[in-house]
Amino acid sequence: MVRPGVVVDVRLRPYQERDLGRLLAAFRGVRRVLYRLPTGGGKTVLFSQVLAMARGQCLVLTHRRELVSQAVRALSRIGCAPGVTCAGMVDPHPNASIRVASVATLNARGLPEGFAPSFVVVDETHLAAARTWRAVLDGLGDVHVLGVTATPERLDGQALGDIYERMIEGPTIRELIDAGHLVEPLTYTAPGEARTRDDGLDVPTLVGEVVDTYERLADSRTGLVFASSVAHAALLAEQFNARGIRAELITGETKDRDQILARLASGETRIVCNYGVLTEGFDEPSISYIGIARCTQSLALWLQMCGRGLRTAPGKVDCVIADHGGNAALRHGPVDVSRTWSLAGRRKRKAADLDAALSVSTCGQCLALWFKQRSTSCPRCGAAPEPVERRLPEQLRGQLERRTAREWEARRREASRKMPIRPAPSWCPPGLWNNLERRRQERGYLPSWTVGAARRTLARERRFWR
Image (cartoon, rainbow, N blue to C red; front, side, top):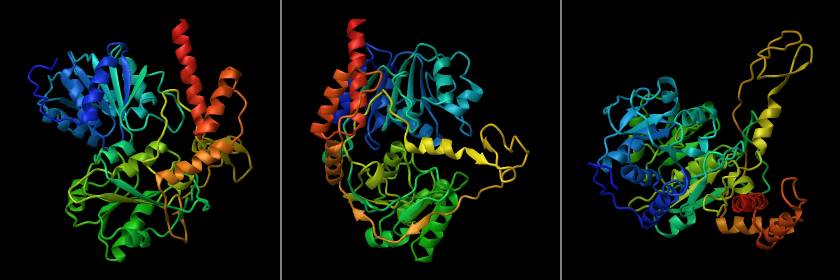
């Protein structure tokens, strides 16, 4: 049933029509559903259709002002006039039955009096395990919840299965490329033998000079460069401009962001350098160059950065992804590699362990060890640590090499086949674990596949015998 006054005139792609039906069917059996769809696949369009069909009051939760605006635009296109709860934005419809809200603002202000949603959409829901998000969701009571994300996985390994009961998976990135909904990524990355450092270290190491690589691969394309710090982004913008390539800088403090992005869209500016700003809520289909001058252990961040350049545009056939941090070679593989997703969560990645190790400080006066989170000075002698400046990345010589998803998957399968069967963990029966490990070896799945498959099997058995 379509919400009164709503005209649903947006033409859905075939997979969106299919997945809309799958979502509606899922909500007949459970109350909390997660929907996974790659960046550029049209998550906002799809959840807008679900909201148009929902009864009662509805709430959209997100964490960036750009994503609030994006949701408002999508709902407006189908005739909905939503209210807005977001710092710095005027609420145009205080009495609307659909409200789009920033989580931070909602935590500070609360919902308007009399607004009690029965259906909630959580955008970028891989963040929903965080304390601020959980506080909002828990305060809403037993409502229906639709979570949408391109990457149902967190860097800290927390499971989303304690929030959502079922996951509906849309098409993969490769399927969207083959169907013409995304363009082909041309991934260039650091050679496999090059050692690069990770997020937690003060001095990341990159391979290949960023501006040289752009001149060699870009052929005057417009695009984004993701730096390892604000200072690094400013330095890269200076280097581009010194070569006659117009570049601008965007940080969290930039006031004229819209004007800069308008110049990028027109081609007046060819490169916009940033640090962690344009990873979500930014959609400029014309850009076809993504320079990643940083390392990251976060698969979600890696896919978000690459996904900024994959949308289709007139005359655009591909996107160059220049990965200077070895993310495609050493950690995650090219953006279009096939991946297995699970609500079960997974072991924490190395960056989380590294952050914990770096939180231990050694006093320069008495050499005592102490935790930075618990005190700002040494608890033994009271000495305060000297401030540590984040240094710019170390740049290694060398050229990035082209790496395809097929090549990476072949290397991954070969490594998995050579890995011996691992002993069963305490929570899994040895017989089940060994059978799954043998299947992992035969088919060359990632080692993490066994854990997810075991948890899914045990969950099905518990539901069956309950």
